[in-house]
Amino acid sequence: MRPIHRIALALALAAPLSVPAFAVEPEAPNALVTRAEAVRIAVQNRLSAKFKETSKHKTDEQGALVEYYAVPNQKLLWVDENGVTARGKSVLDEIRQADDYGLRASDYELPHVASFDASAANAPEWLADAEIKISFAVLDYAYDARGGRLDPQRISRNLDPQLALPNPTQVIESIAIRSEPAAYLRSFQPDQPQFEALRQRLIELRGGKTSPTPEAKVAVKLPEGPALKYGIRHHQVALLRALLEVRSVGSVDEEMFDDTVLEAVKQFQSAHGSYPDGVVGPGTRRLMNEPNKRQAKGGAASIRTVLLNMERWRWLPHDLGAFYVTVNIPEFALRVVKDDETIHNARVIVGKPNTQTPVFSNEMRTVVFGPYWHVPNSIKVDEIRPYLRQEASWFFGGGGWNTTVLQRHGLRVRYGGREIDPRSLDWNRIDIRSLELYQPPGPGNVLGKVKFVFPNKHDVYMHDTNQKQLFSRAVRAESHGCVRVQNPDQLAAAILSHDQGWSPARTLSAMDASYDWQIPLRQKIPVHITYFTAKVNPDGSVSTYGDLYGYDARMAAALGL
Image 1 (cartoon, rainbow, N blue to C red):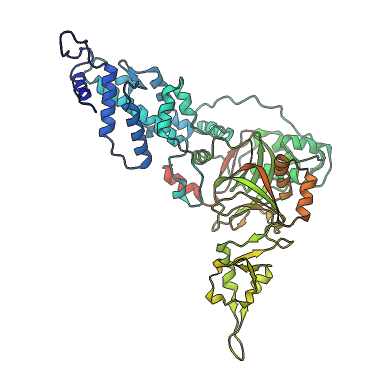
Image 2 (cartoon, rainbow, N blue to C red; image 1 turned 90 degrees about the horizontal axis):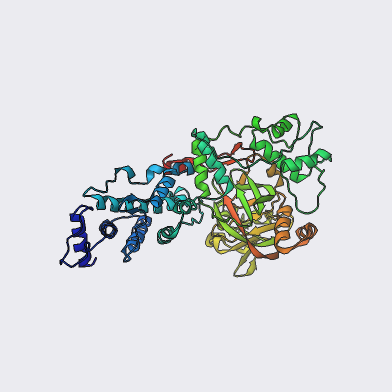
């Protein structure tokens, strides 16, 4: 700080605000330093002297504020000589509502506005303290709202979202020029409809009043009629499609109870605590026609569950994409969303608890028909190498190797791009990870007829499977981490119709006759693999899902819930 500023600050702080600063000469101005300037200099001094933070984000915040207030003639953001301004009060009011957004207002140190006395000798110090507290609270709130309260990787290495944490310099410079700083601060909260629905449920669970919901659509009801089940053709199936908002790719018979309708009915039943048999009988009709009688699967969602799932929404980008694919691991469900409307949904099989499907976002770039399967190192080491056994010879010693595990699964071996007979290798002298083990396309290929590639460090992708019987299970955690998709032809049709203009017939033809046909997508399609254990349904009820990987308890402990 310049010496003149230090002298001026000392002079300014030495006298009450109501007393003019001493003049150097009789003809000098009444005040060398205005009250606002005195406060700004005090803010700068305090920030510089307090530069002792250890965490990176707090250090970054401190540095951003030091730089901002160091600019000559920089205006104060939140206070003037009369106390906290209207802008400052609007921001304070917004931060005090943090609990309604799943945060904690008590985490932010705020000034007590009513305690300010403009005539007090310590008024400049009070104003400087208030300015600093509000600026730090703004930066902390923005950071927390975008997911900075906990590092997901400290919960599990498989929680790998790319957090869009705000730059503190950009935040403070942006909010300084906003006419509505509270609205700008609120914009850091997730703006997804599901986050807002969970927020309203949180307020309700805490006994508060919720915001009015948008005007409801005209309800579709199913009149009395026969049991609707798979394979039946009936005019009420068209009503059922409308009620469940079933959308199919291509032209379909609206009155036919097909695979898509079956899956939608099962998901509805499961979400509302009913046995998912896929049959629309009297009980399911009542649930569909009387939303007030529906109950969330697993009972009412607790405040903790709602808070945890609100926090997970902070892990996702603000803009999910105009067209995207999302998988919710605990729900064992996949959805394709276009312009905020689900156009396709499917059951999925996800990773076992010991080979978990990771949580992350990426972009799909390729659809591969008739794919090769390249065996990952974990499977080579844990599930193949133990079954490669040396066989003893009865006569001359030097028995060969039993490699039937490779033949049984149709696996071939390459090294340096050259095909090798596995029986010719001395497996005791070879690191199996150095070899390429692969399964060519065909009926026995574990990836089935198609895979969907979104390159990532976890080597995870979506694909067909030749173990289709697993889709009938309620809990479908059976993979090594990849996502197996039911009805992958419909997923491929939805993606290629959108990206390539393909017809469903062309997609089916590619599924049945292709051999390692790679279709590069013209536009990258966002893929979001998520972990939500609760969601609010369109009718206002809440569906909860089992905490498959045990993240809820660990997140709750980290957040102090």
